[in-house]
Length: 591
Image 1 (cartoon, helix red, strand yellow):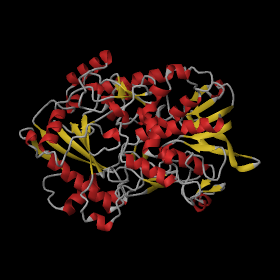
Image 2 (cartoon, one colour):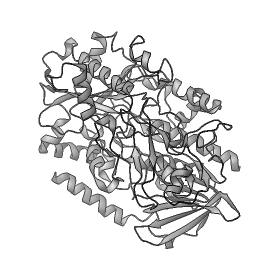
Image 3 (spheres, rainbow, N blue to C red):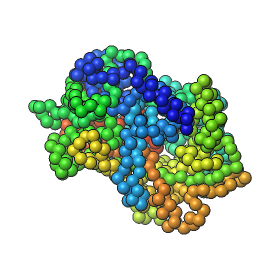
Image 4 (cartoon, rainbow, N blue to C red):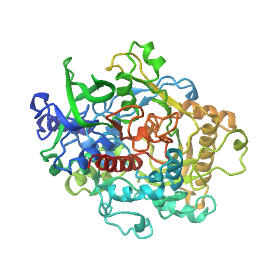
């Protein structure tokens, strides 16, 4: 599409001209700092902002990607699919072949831009269940990770804002569980796709199956509720735009170096388990640079990047590292293990309407008018996605599957599945107009791993997302699809739904549905757990509850990799509170 090409070109021009953040190692004021933050993504941006609130502490952020400034595809919510599909702002990873997906390897989105995945994702703001965090407290032996312990950090992060269209939001959320004073903008959809009213009517016509939940972010997410997005003022609110604002960037103690590819952490010559250096390349040059941390190195490179850096530093499974010829400094077998993701599939129906988000991709006049409206006033269809609501549900307690598998959900308030009610097709790839319900496993039993591909830090790691590894997860997707099909049997859909497109109507048996799932399902790009927390005296895990690397000195991990189980939610909100709490832990340790 010509318009998208022009927008990408505009972003390139701004990237070249942007000058507030360092573009050269030579321009840095020095090579020694109090704290070095590896990764300027969702968590790293928070940590950098919070630590530099103390003017006595110097902080260097090493971000492998480019600036987010002026990247229209990131700023305009409706352009998220174009943002995700463009290689400029992605690491362009792929998984290894997934047995659970009939041997398919799938692309794996990780952002390569300041702000990380918060500048690159679907902007869902979902916290998870109270059970999720209470389980973290149980697994770590630290009540600070419980729902009650962590809840103030949701408020510290969130800044609830009016939707872009300023519609009356009474009855669409619970203001008592939201904050007006945080950093990251959160709002309800700012454009009213008509399908939203049909979703709401379904909760009235089929209330036993699809009860309305006023606010799924209350700690009890079960039911159908209005989707909350990290959108403020009609544009994406990312960690970069909310924590690394222009005034923060101008702090004399904050230094951000872009296109800095970290190779490894360096240990102290007098103590090989004490790390105080970071080795990196810059802007694709073969030259290597070293910077030193006087206090701590904070690893915020994400669930894939964090173990990748540590393993190349000699930390990880001893046998694996020795097999690649990497000298072992710390044998930590749990590193890179126990990762999980929310496997997902899509159900789609052709509808009797042209008023869906599909129109943006099929009507150039409508696209241009909508973009002009957004560009001028930050209102209109570009202010949101086509997803108006989400539903979170549990399997039936008496399902036979529980005779074969232990329930992986954290507790009775925790969903097994998520349904995303969408005006249009997911990704907008079909001709025509559609209603979709994207379904995902909210509490997966499947597990995967991150391992090194070679001893070369520039080689991508081996990503085994473990998608649908467990038959339990396949069963959840089956039941979620059946629930989606039941959803559109409500009277309100009569005359609107014309034809089921996916799964194909000739799929009439469970075995055929399973084959469809394994052939078409994919990832939500929500990997978590590769550097999981555990109790201080545990014989497993990667970090203690204070997020310090077990068995080492000078390294703290602050990102989604520390979550010992994936939350039953999109991981953005959980990552923000890990970063906020992690920042406080660092401040307490050094104040």
